[in-house]
Length: 172
Image (cartoon, rainbow, N blue to C red; front, side, top):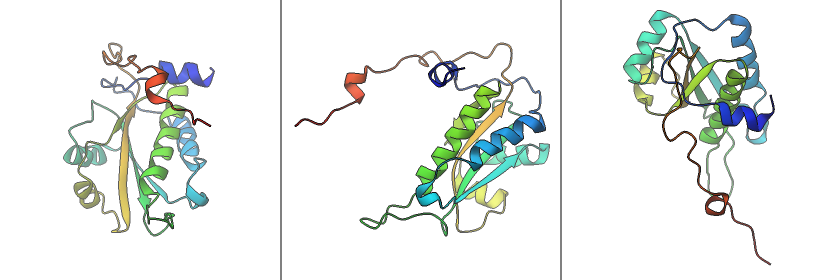
């Protein structure tokens, strides 16, 4: 499938079948995370795979957004390894983590695995529940699994602003 076709077909799944993601597919998804570009190639990502009942229960304490997923991938950035922009000190943690999450999301879609990007979670609670080191910043998560038969995109999924509203060209 061509990338634009994949990107257009992918949607946030909010109803999962309960079928677990096979190890072979999870390995491919994690490889996509591993090869994601990061600032200066510092690779600060720390990818936490949550798939046991106990881990998923802990996740439910961090966020109400699970939708019956059989897999949650929480992407953190090790702040000791992130690049900092010298002009203003901007830390690359959220950017690097978002790139990693996007790679995971798109590889999962290619494999027929649905996902929803979750930013609505309590990072302090995640740090506590999963005993994350102080220098780890929880950037975002993907709840994942096989879409339920009745899963459909949200009503506004295909609503996109015209390029003229979001794209600007420099003028000479």
